[in-house]
Length: 170
Image (cartoon, rainbow, N blue to C red; front, side):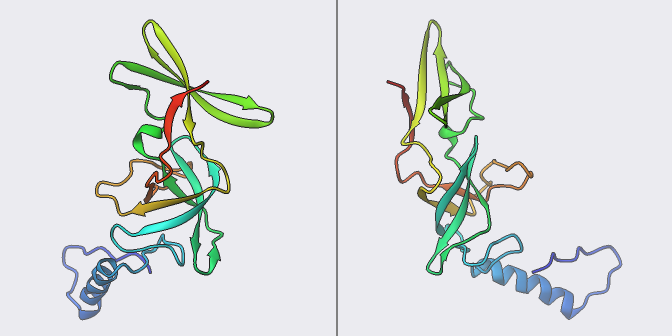
């Protein structure tokens, strides 16, 4: 689907141009794919989609859609829940700084939670790992607030059905 042509002052009214707009709104309300959607990915308002994680980033995970036809090949950014994002640097008087730790050759993101005079090292438990499956929803009112490295907005947000949370490293 191509972008709708914008109207300019003095443009003539035509059935073709009006129907193009009506068709687009009908497609959106019925949950049809928009121009940036991958084939087989959930489309309707509040639709829930099954994903397989390809790669973990600071505020999102890059995923492939999982459908009845199998696992897709289009990379789709899925925003992490707000409290799991690395963009969060302070909350309720606690300051957060992020670092990468290694266990063997595996990189693990940790954060230092500091509320003077105490500091605690935390990790997300369970961790996001490539190959894990998650469920996400799209068409969040106001968007997710997350963009990928190409400045493309993450249109899905992880529903966090695995109960991930920052926890004290032991």
